[in-house]
Image 1 (cartoon, helix red, strand yellow):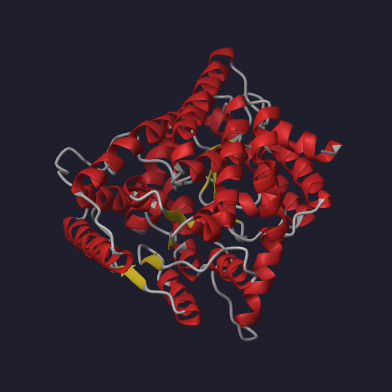
Image 2 (tube, one colour):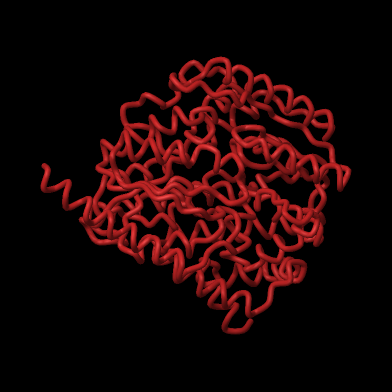
Length: 472
């Protein structure tokens, strides 16, 4: 093994024994994906420049993401059946009961895994995107997450699944594109639908929405059993709820420490890796490692808080970034380089007064638990809840500014952007910047241009912060 391979695997916490055991399978997956030594050198530089690999927890997370991607690439050869679920929704936990009860079946929240792994760890997302785009007529565009999946399947990197599950939560784009793929490859597909007419004057939970989505999930599991010719006992569904609680608590604790402390103890680039990692389902071999990785990271962040340490010095402006990049840690790292502390994202926070936190005490079954959880996520619950969350969090945690990040290829994400901007400026009276990007597509990251905009916003926030101190 040459020096590049050695450095790459060392960065991902692989022992020499693990490398020796797994290398033949890894090399087979690398050949399928077209990985070269140049790709690995790019990835080493990208990760070391944008993620904090001095944190053991972060290295453990990256290792599991690597292994899960290798599993995905090899799934067509190693599993009897395959099922993919797409975003948005409850991520990989929705199909964890399938993998837990039927280990011969592979299942994954595929676009979430590809978003967080293909570019940082393998340098191959752009190739998949470009392949997927050849099916789009000129002037047309679809979500980059689905274009990545379409391209990878067309390249033969990801196997054709026996079934696809598509969420109609928040996004009406997903069901359309997954139906396109299902028709192209003749794949059975089932949809989990949701009302889109969000109330504007009430908080969560919305009983009508929760009940409807819970019934949609019950219907979906019946269809899964029928198509895959399996049975999924209720106990397996309930066990999944229990499995998700530990990692979710650890991630939530990390996010809360970022809100509570100055300096913010973790960068948004590292937080987004942990956020997406927490939402994946893992193979039986990696489930315990997932728990350990998030717990390790939580403890390391706690130690930083005790020491008063963080990637940006204390006293610098604290902001919220609504939808940071999923696929490109380098673009997320720019905030840190420009002296901004990102305390969190509204994809992962609830208001401190508990007004939008779902009450799960009355959830007696898996379906209502998931429905209530999903429907309370600010992005899923609509503009009214997003306003409620941003207002409460900005006030309590002394947030100096907010960045709204509509994705170019997300029609729904753009639809409420100006509404939210007006709310932040007029109601919260704090600086706000709209920064168009694509959370799934790293090609929209132009370092010089984005750096100039962030630096300008950072200067605005410094002035705002000083004026606030004078007023107080």
